[in-house]
Every structure is written in C-alpha cells, then in structure tokens.
Image 1 (cartoon, rainbow, N blue to C red):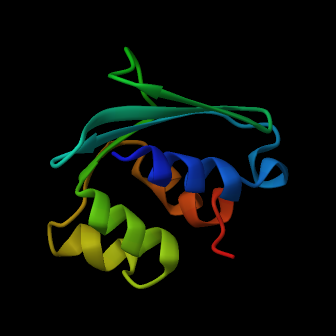
Image 2 (cartoon, rainbow, N blue to C red):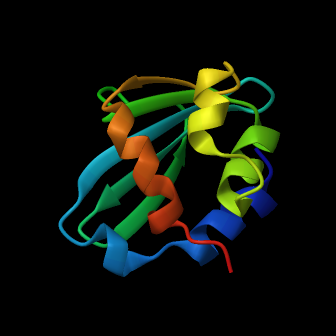
Image 3 (cartoon, rainbow, N blue to C red):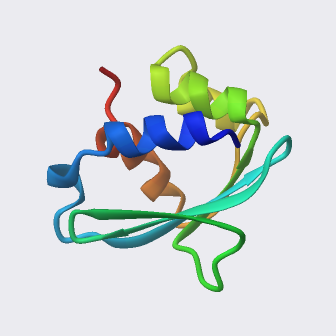
Length: 103
C-alpha cells in the first residue's frame, strides 16, 4: 500500500468515532502486502505486517479499499461479490466508514 493511501487514512481518521474502541483491523492487500490499524480509545496506530490477534481481518485490493472509503463501492456489495473477504468480527468492518469519513 502506498504511503499516500496510509496518509489519507490517517488524515481522515475520526477520533470521536473511535472513543472507547479497542480494536485491531488487519488488512491483507492482494497487491500490497499486510497492514493493521490499531485503534484504541480515539487513537490510531498504523503498522506494516500481521497482528497476532486482530479483531477483524479483511482481504482485498487497495483499489477496493479506496472505492469503499470514497463511497464508490458499497462494502456489503464488495463482500457479497467476493472483492472483500472478512473473518473475525465482521460487523466491525461496517464501522470503517464512520472511523474514516470521506471529505
């Protein structure tokens, strides 16, 4: 995943939506390796690699993530059509758009 995409995520992070959360979102990008977002009570930490015990794991391409985050792709549709695979607490994935609202 490009640093540009990571910077955009960090810039869009909504600490208010993350108050009281203690979750790890693991991303496995088929075109860019693995990263995880550690969200703890309004803070965001982005790390490269794999977390030992993520709350939810998502497998997708960086383009699919960009589409979901921009609203061009419906996350549920991406899941149903196989563009997005999720394991763990799948309902957490639905919070991504409130945690990282588009401009």
